[in-house]
Length: 346
Image (cartoon, rainbow, N blue to C red):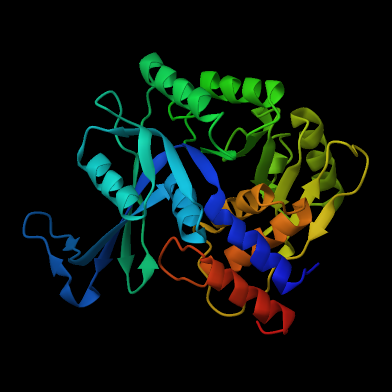
């Protein structure tokens, strides 16, 4: 399924008029560039001390979605979540400021630490990651701030993208209480568009569009066994998720593209939107977030679900070519990917 270039240009041009809120876990992605030639033994331990010769930072998790929205040209992006009153929080705020993300609803609080993914890079390859996360329940005072922000923004934004990144239950931004607020908004109001992506709990989201990958869909029904996913099983899970939420469900499948399930057709087979082929070395870090940003922006710009999924696939095909970084895709890059696909260039 490929639409005309003018149709794609029209939708991309509408992004500048959109306002989208990114609600969720804002991480700091910290990259350390290690020079193997400078390895030296530690006098104290005898272990090899890796020598960092370069550092860079970028917003991660919900911040990756926000960054992708910004590069796509969305007119205003509101960050809703929290950072700690710490150095990582300050650096994350600087990163968001550099790309033009509004922080009016991003709480800085001493009650939380700023989540951080530290990624040592050696010869361009990521080594063992070092994670900093909150592993205690999010305080009610922080929950109240987030819920109040969501309720205030609901009348101002075209869409709310929910990124539930933290695996530990009720220890991140999207707690049970926050999720119930979003469900209530989805049930009682036709707008804004609400869209959720959750690593561990996608099956608990209702009254909103949801996106997950095939493994996450199966895990909601305790059907994932670490092997090839049976098509019939995945179709069943997608239909059931659509029935539960009462909204569209998008399931990404890597090289197999995306499946779209509509709640109005509970027994129908999913619509399959093909992947954009990419040859050579790839880095899938952040591909799902790029898909989400482009997909939601496209829906807000008037795209059909199939068109939106295809634009999401085009954006992801751009980002996975950017090795050693959490990439983004600009409108020009999305258009170039469309040109390559339409001309059979991989």
